[in-house]
Length: 207
Image 1 (cartoon, rainbow, N blue to C red):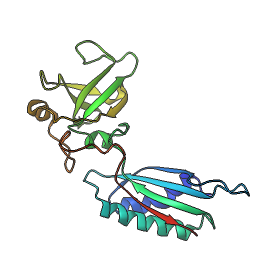
Image 2 (tube, one colour):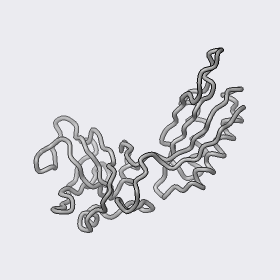
Image 3 (tube, one colour):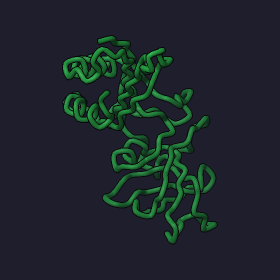
């Protein structure tokens, strides 16, 4: 069985050529264990993303190429596996600069590192804000919601954790303007039902 690192090495090049970032690889068992102790079937999950909108046709194209690469490598031998190529769910953590760019205009739950100065009026280390534009090592945040939106700036180094939040209502025009709008290709928060998981294309393969 190949490791997640091995699969990442095999597919990273083609994912990049397709214009995507490889956000992660997960390998797990997808079926019941056989009497001989074999796992039965493996699930290989490839997570990709890009600054532009990702549609199902693009995901299906990447899935087809990934399956060809994995088949050619032969690391799975005769073991059956289910391939899933997917985009990150709405509520994924923001851990890289590109994540913050793609989250512009979205509401984010933020936890500051110990000792960091809080921009929140109450001085809270945990608060919600709307992500604005990324400027080097700092991120603009809109606090105050629809009622009293105002812009602050926080160093990324001061943020211990940040997770995009599900929204059922559209943001106010003033707070969205302060945030610099929505990231290109991304939907307006609250304008459609949120997909908590992702878009995906899956293919079962037996070698």
